[in-house]
Amino acid sequence: MKIQRLGAMASLALVGSLALAGCGSDNNSGDSAASGDSSASASSSSDCFEGTLNAEGSSAQKNAFEEVSAAFSEKCTGATVNYNPTGSGAGIKQFIGGQVDFAGSDSSLKTEEKDGKVEATDAATACGSPAWNIPMVTGPIAVAYNVKGVDKLTLTPAVAGDIFSGVITKWNDPKIAAVNSGATLPATDIKVFFRSDESGTTENFTKYLKAASAATWAGEPSKKWTGKGEGKEKSSGVTEGVKSTDGGITYVEWSYAKEASLGVAQIDNGGGAVELNSESVGKAVATAKQTGTGNDLALKLDYATKEAGAYPINLVTYEIVCSKGKDAEKQKNIKAFLKYFASEDAQKVIEEVGYAPLPAEVQTKVEAAIEAIS
Image 1 (cartoon, one colour):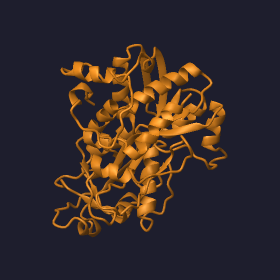
Image 2: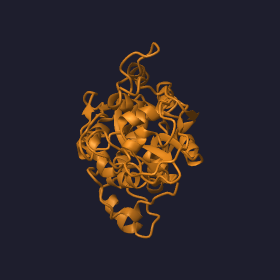
Image 3: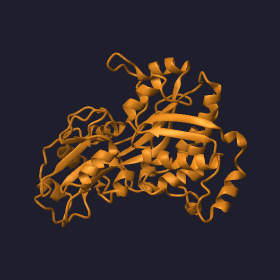
């Protein structure tokens, strides 16, 4: 992926986000001096640190995280923030095991028992304090496809459920044709690709199918795929599978679909076909309900929304942190990086590479939660 430099995008508007003080922006582009100066006025040396942070988890936020951490390290020259995109499930396990400083996850820590364990309880034990879910990246999930001759596609929840459960197997199926009037659909076989690793993206996509299309999707939401198709590891794997296969389709973060130039279906939940873009995503995420308490900002999205213009298939990637850590210096460094991640400059960057900035309703709470880390 091409690194999108902050300075070159200083004039872009950030939709629905509040600026936080940060370490400043990347100063490698031609107009970097003005960008760096404006950021510096809101920054202090305490927002930078010398040392290394290690994080692991969601591959959905990989592209966003790498863009932001690179910019942070260029401004805060003594700081390095590493990210290993092993998947949400692996990231949470590593965080609980004390192997990483914080985790990235496409779903909040579970508060109910599963396989004899409660993630939130185990994380609190590891931290010695409650662990907080802090939403940082809004990652729209694209239904991405590669069908020769089909440049525009609309799917309803029912049709999507039938495709991903293997009921519809040809692209010219009458059910697809019925919601794509006038389109010329080939008799090409449908080839579904799914995440073979435990994935928060899978969990959020199956939450959508269950909520919006219970009649055609019998499975329960899970990090493990229960539908049909061919498994590929990580977001990069399913993206490459579709890109190299005529008739391919998958669910994947918008940033990956954009980078691979795949087709992205419009989704009609009942309020009309909605194109995936920052505005339609923000409209949906702004209605999310907080299920955590206080500074634990776990959110519940309304996947079945029929609101006109709201794109319903989204995930919010959380940075999972100890609210009060055993290592005060490490906590201070985590706080500095997350403060920058939530800043206006950083949110502009992730928007350019296929993510949506957090709506103001959520951003205000994120700011308060980061300030409360100790």
